[in-house]
Image (cartoon, rainbow, N blue to C red):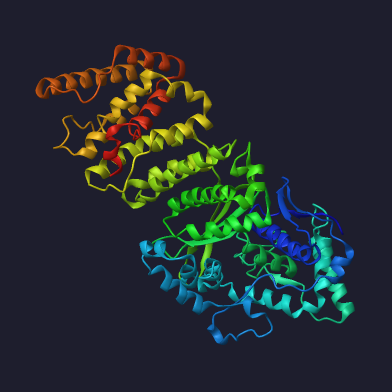
Length: 576
């Protein structure tokens, strides 16, 4: 029981297991912090069927016997239903929900440009509590969880005199990968009876912490139906309440009363680094529509992770990252969708959102390069309207982001080409194309077999020709460009890419009309603004099609043909 590694068995396959692991890590961290003077750490590691919580120091028996009581999660005071203010808890662990809610409403009314100009000191004065999203989630009437949650906080406080016994039984429960809750709960009840302490050992399983469980058909054996609450050992439910503050990111689905909760799934990360990254992530992820919010959650978290690694104080984490990607530290996020049913909310969907798996960091320069890619993708996704033709696009991108499906990414870039042209035509210049540089970073570093295609002169020349027939004249405007805007070019090439010969024929037709148009403009103006496609360029494409197939070459031509080339003098037209 007194050891340097403790275990949380994965019993549910949901974020209930994660909450429990983070809660245990937080409790053990508080014990080490009191007795270890030269620094300490607590690490959570995914070991397949269980989480291992590893300590920098072997936990000594005398530490457990003399560990001071700690409040690890706050009591949330709303004033509803005659609720009284708690006086036994430290003031820092009593949250005045209404005051925090008023502060939040005032903060979001401050214009973004004004917030960016405020000093850090002034910003800290107006910002709501960093854990306000969790307070809001717990305190939401529809969740029907506040009383039970606060009951756990009060029970931990009321049994503060039994803290050593509570800690011992938690360690007993976590001493092996096979957690035997029935044995430990029975031992705890026996010990409380010996001490003359009257306390219940059970607590209600809240769907707040346990999204796969709740009222209803919950018999171990299907012998009857009943609507009783499901019960569990209260110490485990308290640890879930604690762990929630170290991994949960609840948000409201824009335009609805529905909620989504994202919970980090650790692979191998220290608690202090986890908490610092989570704090930054809580600050940058805002409410959005359902699919878009999934995408932005993954992108924003990776952005915060990489930014944290760049900080000088995190040289150790950067050293751990080299040769790996963020997914080697946090696998992704468990996601629970809570549907509003009027007076209550119910779990309607459980899923898992993986972090991008196309990053491998070999140096600090790679961190910078990937941050630029993530930033560009974030800005592109933010400006896609899910309700105006963007839903399918976002679904394709999410499949690529979370599942690593390159076909989904190329379906996205092909569809985005049409979306981009339409939005530019409507003078919506917030919608931006990808940059060829960042596309190359993404593809070459994560799909190396495609690198020879991108380095072929013919491929680059024809991609440039597509660009100069689509987005460049589109940005200039129909009346300003000397050249025709080819609106359906990307869709035509995608459609013809099912068969090699049909694709080559379509591309040859484009080449002929492109060169003919160059000749007409030269004849009329005496100037040639774009170079011709050569027979060598087509020969290069034919060789690539023979080697890789028309679909692959077409997908890449469309992706790069509708991207902006930073070295191009006319790229200024795309970013103005």
